[in-house]
Image (cartoon, rainbow, N blue to C red):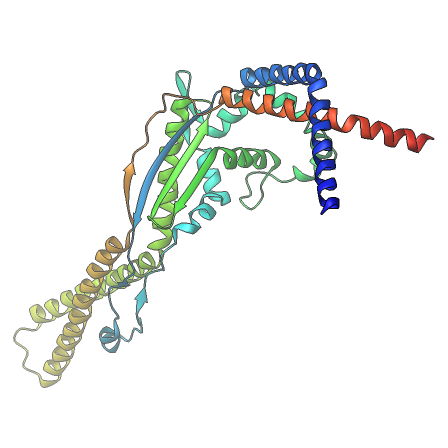
Length: 359
């Protein structure tokens, strides 16, 4: 019991000694905390303004089958079509993957955004705008090793031309990284809504990008969902056009035969004429069935097309989303306090260890 009390007393004495050491170095701590506050103030003032525009929408889709089969028609026309079903739903959790695909990113970079009194593509907007001072400082201080490595192997990474859609050039890679940092897509699986936000240095550009990116994303989802339905529709349309030509040609042929041979009572001719009429009836049945299937396919494509209900439309932000200058000052002040206290506490033990090593 006495040993435990002695240990507790020693711990308390150590803690008191540490507090005394910190208190005795309060001027050092205050001074260095002030230095960090000044640095934080500079960072807060040099950080570029950023504006965030957002939109929230709900995807409303359903699984279904396209039209039906042409099994009855196959026996008449000798065509084996079978059944055709639409593609499955794209779960909202895959929307970020679609947004991060190279074709979609290229579409985003081609969006026209306002610049002065005209408009330019967003890729040109990103390449023409000046780099913020703080970004340059970070690039050539903290990011200097990466700059050196990039310069060493940059010639290899920049091979190829943008005319080949399978090659991502070094310039495109940098633009894609910028898009990834600016565009955020969050999916709420429980409530079933999707929130898209874009952050840039201009409020109007942020709003335009958010609206256009949402349209591009939704169109990609629609194209995927109705892809199989469209293929079935195109196939049915092609068959319909061919059978329509055959049906109309047979109609004309039968009509000409009637007009040219009104007074002929030959049994051979009558037999040939009945055969033509039978072919016409078959062609008519095929044509009418295909017409029904074509309309069903059109209706099914319209039915399968996903609908996106916007519950929060895009608006131009009036207040900046960054930088949060007060928060930056608090973080730097706290960092300065922690670093200065750590120096005070670690300085003496480190010096003692160094002296022992040298001795």
